[in-house]
Amino acid sequence: MTGGESERPDERESREGRGGEPDDLLRALEAALFASTEPLTIAQLRQILGEAPDLPDALRRLAGDYAGRGINLVERGGRWHFQTAPDMAWLLRRDREEPRRLSRAGMETLAIIAYHEPVSRAEIEAIRGVQVAKGTIDVLMEAGWIRPAGRREVPGRPLIYATTPEFLTHFGLGSRRDLPGIEDLRAAGLLDPIDLVLEGLSGQSVTESSLENGEGGD
Image (cartoon, rainbow, N blue to C red; front, top):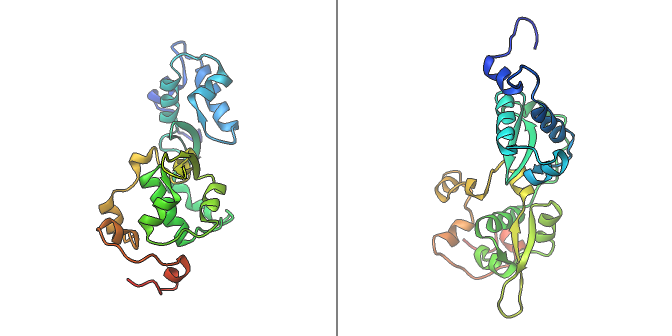
């Protein structure tokens, strides 16, 4: 606290036990999450803290303590971590190294996997109407956003792919249910060229390079 600020009674009650002493479980959770280099599941937290009673409730209480602050405690895909408050992210962008941007083909491939998982390479190509360039799926796997999810029980038993918890964390999603709907994507102009497929249109398959050069037709 600074200056004449005082802690609200509800914050004090959350952080302290009935006897007015700091809540050791909340402090331990805070320390474990702060020290971790990656988001933690409740099972992983139990391995660190032992069989703490009502750990999910303690996590919600701790998240409440950080609500409205410069950093927040959030849950993404069943894993908990601290992150910069969304309205404060602009302060850090100028100092952060800009990661390599995904190509349009990479973004389309990632979107198809997210909305249709589990999905095979052939199914991705059928939806996009173009061949998936060699390395596109490798780039997504190296980023940690997709993973092999088994094999389709059809002739040839092709690999199928699904998204990962890292995908949810990176894009700020609690689960795949938080993905924007079709109308949201259409309103934002993000359905080209996938929207053609979703509207029931189909065209002759072309190479990825010809599409990106505008040679594949409308």
